Image 1 (cartoon, rainbow over the protein chains, first blue to last red):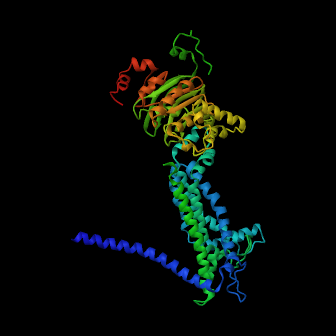
Image 2: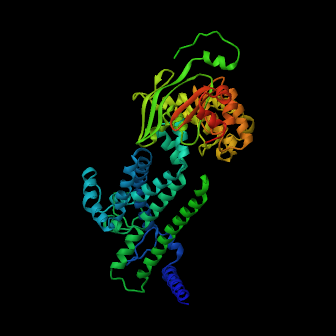
Length: 293
Length: 270
């Protein structure tokens, strides 16, 4: 029968589309693991995790991932330090204070922030934010974690504000009414009732934003520098995991060499970070989601 | 407002109510939602320490009217009120009134129990804390007193640190009443407080209302006419935004003057 055949073809096509996605993921993880295992045959995992220097491209080679990890954590912390207060403030404003029409039109506008190419953000950090910060604090290096982190924070504001606002919106209206009915102001209601009640959703939004910041590449590659350094000083050049991968990929390191394999070791470190964060957010979502149903 | 009507006190509770002072007064109240008129020229006075029931079919405006007394309608877009509502002789729709202060005097219990996702203790202490009370001993005293007032103390005294969401629906609703009592309001508005509860929990709350009447003025919206007849001193019947009849509960249910009231209470519509 004709319709039966059609159905079968459609089903096969859908299956194919699904399996391509899964196979790609499996393929990426496979390549990562293969190259990483090859890397750890030459470099001990203990050195990788404990050495305080990362200089695979120098003659005096060190393979300690910690400086790259510290650079990543530093820029991420600065980004979250910017995005969490601003994003949450926006979410609370939209949910508790703004007129309904404003919320509808403002949210998509805010999400445009996430649509700006990150390379634009990178140059914005390097050519606008850094000179501005230098005018306040002259000792700031031309490449630094601070301006990269701040700009990255601006980029991830929509993640925090939009998802947090969704979480606030999902809090039952009856709780808001109860608080207002007791004579609470909007401010008191926001911070004593709404934010605690939406906390799981807000935490998830922050975790996803962190995950995004950790994986962010262009901004830090352009504005934060390329000097792996185990420091939490935001005013000096550093290097993040992602920036290192870019640096090596763009350079003339021969394929199959140990130097080449370092990017897979760095890549899998990054992957583990983001994978753990995503799992954590998934777990929190699942655990606390049905609290009010 | 200190207008005590100095009539001779006669026998019977209904007579006593007439002696009491007026605490709520609505003067020619019209309410609009955009172009829709939800209330049409309502005039009504409520005496203190009484229970007043608002009855009427769905959409008749009884809940809208109740929510005018603590200005809970303020959050609805296109809500517009014309006329005056006085509580304790203060015009509450005057634009310089502090709504938060008004709501401290006029508490509200909602249709569905809505405790905060906090501990039992924190739920009852919430109102005191937001109104700036820091004295811990006083807060504790008020929490215990309020829980005793709603007959919940014996059931929860060992679980004050537990989440209020773990309580049963009836207990949650009594907790919500306790939360309202803790700030010692003068008036308690109840918007169908038992409609989501089982008969036993409902009976407990009705029983409670008799005691609360000694200290508070209660205005209750209900769909359950037996409930109105059992618990209230005065009953107001609303229909399509009009206040059809407002009288002693006994009169409304035994000898209503309006045909519409008669038809509604005998179940011919609604």
